Length: 372
Image 1 (cartoon, one colour):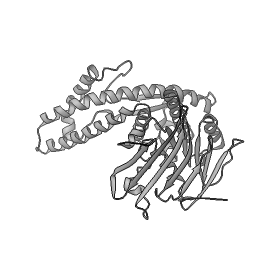
Image 2 (image 1 turned 135 degrees about the vertical axis):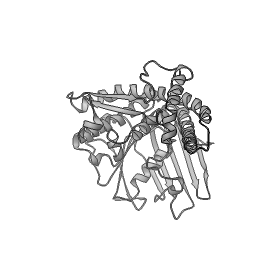
Image 3 (image 1 turned 180 degrees about the horizontal axis):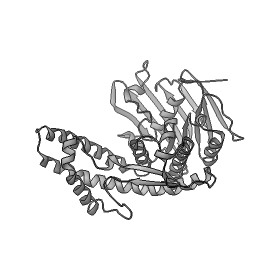
Image 4 (image 1 turned 180 degrees about the vertical axis):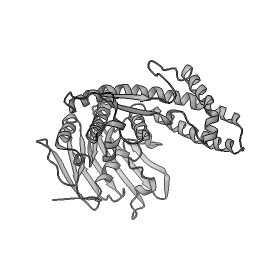
């Protein structure tokens, strides 16, 4: 899969962008705050996911514009395709999205068409950061493969909000504990399903990431990735999320009910699970050096691309947002060599050496592509 053309206008500070992309390497070069990351963000939105910068919809539109327009033409092994994405200040809830001329109801309906993997400097700390970042990583990866999974996650989040609100009301005597039953039953089924999906993806991630980490450490260190559930002691060979697993989940919720009421929030569940990285048996979060943690982050992202390739039979587009400048030469070469058969978009402040790889360089200033 590769992007052939990108048109962007009115998206943050970008205006009149029209890029004919190279099939392999595209370098977006410019000083800070000129629009490099905005361009990557616009591509990412068209993959069907939310902004990796957590930007709100209203903040995506240029202050001097009434709307933004993004149009991306791309090809996979079967055909040429086109995505048009428009958002207006006058109606932020009504996104105008078309795939090959067919209107779509939601951005998530773009899933499975333009497949991308984005890598930002913040991702370099994924193994050291909060469990929420690691859960989000697994959920994004799984959603790219299974579109319906995102809807289940959203439903679970809605139920969790309702349950936590109810717990607070119970603690001050405004509601009865019996009212939790209806929420707990739904949460148990959805949470069990999410556990199954996350565990299955983690097993695949472990296979690819362990192999890649062995390469980057030159065989000196072994990486193991484990899914740590706050509900289930063992998830191996478990899939009955509507039966036995849901009952076990429900039992745990009921057992923790008094503690939840006292705390005012749900103390167990998939919202408290974690992804554990171990190097030679030691938890990377606690004992990993900065170099080891960066290497773990690199193999996470490359493994994500490989798994997406395996599942969809299409090579994803790789979006490297100012990441290479954070890496030493050894890790730069490792990343570029492992994604050499995929289309790559790289942002940087100074033009980088591609070690003989051909590609195109685009210079950006004040949100516009300039000639140099």
